[in-house]
Structures are given as structure tokens and as C-alpha cells.
Amino acid sequence: MADLLTIKQASEWATHYLDKNVTTSNISYLIQYGRIKKIGSNGTTQVSQRELINYYKSYNGHRELSWKDRLGEDLNWALSFEQYKEAETTKHVHRLHPYKGKFIPQLVEYFLDGHTDNFKKEIYFKKGEIVLDPFAGSGTTLVQACELGMHAIGIDVSAFNSLIGNCKAGRYDMADVQNQISRISKAFKEFLSDSHTLEFEEKLLKELYRFNNKYFPVPDYKYKVKRGEINEDKYGAEKEKEFLPIFNRLVKEYNIKLRQDKTNSFLDKWYSQYIRKEIEFVFNEIKKVENRDTKKIISIILSRTIRSCRATTHADLATLKEPITATYYCAKHGKVCKPLFSILKWWETYSQDTVKRLMQFDKLRTQTYQACLTGDSRAIDIFKELEKRNPAFAELARKQKIKGIFSSPPYVGLIDYHEQHAYAYDLFAFKRKDELEIGPLCKGQGSAAKASYIQGIADVLNNCKRFLSDDYDIFLVANDKYNMYPAIAEKAGMKIVNQYKRPVLNRTEKDKGAYSEIIFHLKQK
Picture 1 (cartoon, helix red, strand yellow):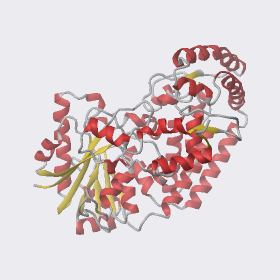
Picture 2 (cartoon, rainbow, N blue to C red):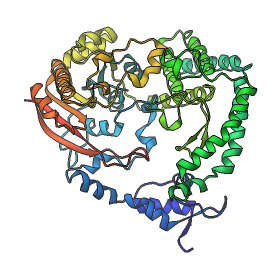
Picture 3 (cartoon, rainbow, N blue to C red):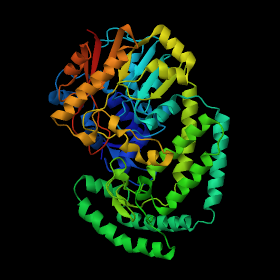
Picture 4 (cartoon, rainbow, N blue to C red):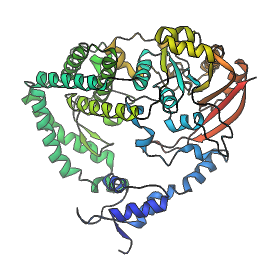
């Protein structure tokens, strides 16, 4: 075939075709996950240029035209940031811990930095000024402000969210962090040395490897599924059932206890007996750490670890339906997968990753103040609470006031923000304040929920106004499909002076719909 390319040739061709860097790893990913067909054997692998063209047809302007056709010509494609890879949108400390609903750092940077363009015609924030995020979430605004040489204050009603934000922006004695991780890891491995669960898991992995190689060969299986040559639901269910006796035999042989005796709490329900014991062991070792900052960042490592070790399928980590205690067909990976029986692998992986990310951010951070306060943004006395955390920062804030806000308020009826981290609230015994959430999922999207949401966001803005400079600029990122923000601005005594409509590009294969959000620019009326 005349259009065959080696992986290296394909990466070079795609780089030119898309006008963005496409690596050999990117091409290999397309092969591995069945997006394009592998031709030849290892060492002489080739792909079809025609197939690549068909795969990339949504790029190179085609997707922009398609989305504008569906969402309107006022869509600002420059704010899609499609040129950035995932590694860049989750750079350094931004991926210290998963968090639903966070915006990408490039969006914050666009409005905070000192550039202008055809859409952003003036500079709103300068180095040394203070930025406020009254819905701080996981701290993206704080981190980007630090990188850009600005001070930042975050506020969040969730104690765990505040912990994440402060840990991302915090400074550490890295030698102490690494020494404590090493100490805990060593003790953890000694704790596991006489555990038969590791031997059980090793044997289970070997059986799965043989079974999956036979029935779900990579990349042929996924390629055939993509093209409808295999009915994935039917075939997957058949093979899941076929492997189950092998799993049950090993469970019986090693006398594995799959469930805990009680299901009263999140930790009781969503973790196996063995993992629960491991979590308790590591947590008790963390309690021995004397340096408070070190203790906090290692607690975040444990929280990130246990989130990945919940008894659920790989495709359902974000929503959680029912606990999984046996092997299952995994549509995400295209093979039979298993629940976890130890946190060791993830603990070691995330420990190394966290240290690496903290050191990366250390090279970029500036000598500025960042603090995330725990409280209700509708009523909190920002300067008074800041005084308790950092008197020097509070003095600076009182003197020069806060220049403005960059924030992404919760969307009405979309997420229960405390519930997404229920495992952490159980582990750390944080007090939950679900009743203070604005627009939670549990209250729905009815007329009463919308009215409450409008009042709640307006109350936040009215409270925060007291701490802002007279010439403030407020940027709120929202998908305002119910057209609530004009009413919010009115109730807050503000006016919407500009709107930036941006496409939110798909991050999963299941989510293919065109979706947009608006960045509302508000000023004093």
C-alpha cells in the first residue's frame, strides 16, 4: 500500500498536518486503543495515512467549524486551548489530587497575565496585586496567581477543598517530605511482608494476563470493537462470566475476605477489608510526622491513593454505583479487570509523582502570598480570617485591597461537592457542611433551586465587594444555560461588561457533545 507510514513517519506527517507536535507515543496510543489499525509486526509496525486523515478530520479547523455551527459564531475558539496536551493542562501541582469541575490553568492564566489580543483588549491584573477566588475548589486560581507573581486568596466551604488548595500552593522542606515518605513506605512494606493478599493478587494477575492475551489481544480486539466487528457488550459479558470460576477458586484458596463486616460509613462500604487495614496503618504512620506542612502534603498523597482504590470499576471512579468485589469486563481497558486488594502500588506511584510535581512548581513559583480560607463566602470576613492564617498577608490586603475575582462558581444542580470526597471526610474526620453548598446536585434544577442559586451567588458577590478595590474586575466562569447571571449581576449591584464564550473540549470518549461555557466580566454598576 502506497500510503503506509512507519510510526516515526506518521508522527512527522501528523505534526505537519495538525500544525501541532504529535509524538511517536501519540501514534502508538492510537494503535493500542484501536483508533487506527496496526499493520505489520513489532519492529516493522506501519499505519495507513488514509486512516490517520479520517481520524484527524475533526481537527485542523473542521471541529471549530462544526462546533460554531452548533453553538454559534460567537464561540471564541482561541479559548479552547486545544493546542495543549493533557500533561500541560494538568501541569505540576495542578494534578496533586483529582477534583470534579475544575477549570484548566491556561484559562486562568489568559485573564490574569499581562498580554492583550483581539478578544482581551486590556490588562486586568498586574504583578503584586491580589486576586480572590470565593469558590476556590482545588486551588487552580491560587496556583496560577503564584506562578504569575500575584497574591491570591481562596475561600471554600469545604475543609478538604481548602486543604488541597493550601497544599498545592504551599512551601515544603522537601528533604523532610522525602524522608517521611521513605520511612512510611518502609514500615508499610514490613506490615505487608506476611500478608497473603499480595501473593493472591500476583497469582490473579498472572491468570488475567493469560486470559486477556487469549481473548482480548491488543490492539486487534479494540480495533474490531471500534468497527463493529465484535459486539462488545455481549462478548465482554460472556468472557467476564467465563473468568469468574478462576477468580473464585483463588479467593477460596487464599481465604480472601472480599467485604467488611459493616457498611455504615463510606470507608466501610467502598473498601475491601484488606485495603481498609492498609489505609489505617499508613494513616497512623502519617500521624507520627512532626512537621505540619509535611504531614498535610503526605495526607493528600494518601487521599489521592485511596480515591483510586475504591471498590469500583475503572470507568466508574467519578460517580460510584455499587461496590465491585469480583473480576469484571472493563470497557475502558477492553479486557477483564479486577478490583484492588492493596494500596501499595498507588501509594508508591503517587508519592513519587507528588514529590516530582512539587519540585517542578518550586522552580516556577514567585515570592508571593497565597492562602485558602475555609468558610462561607456569603458571610466570611476575609481580612479577619486571613489575619489568623497570615498577619503579614492580611496587612498587605487591608492596605491595597483585592483587585478582583477570578472564579468558577458551582453550576446549579450538577455536583454535590462534599460527597465527591466522602472518603477523605471519613478518613480525616472533617466536619461536612453540605447544607452551605450553593446549587448542589441534591437540590436539583427546579425553579426554587434556581432562585436559591441566584440569591446565593449574588450574596457571595455582595459580601466580597466589601474587600475589593473600587476599580475591581470580576470574571466568573459559568455554563449559564438558564440565563441566571444577568439577575445575579443585578442583585449584586454590578453590570456585565463583556462575555467570552468558549468551547469546553471533550475529555472522554463517552462525552462527544459540543459544550460551551461563558466567562462573565462584571464591574461596579
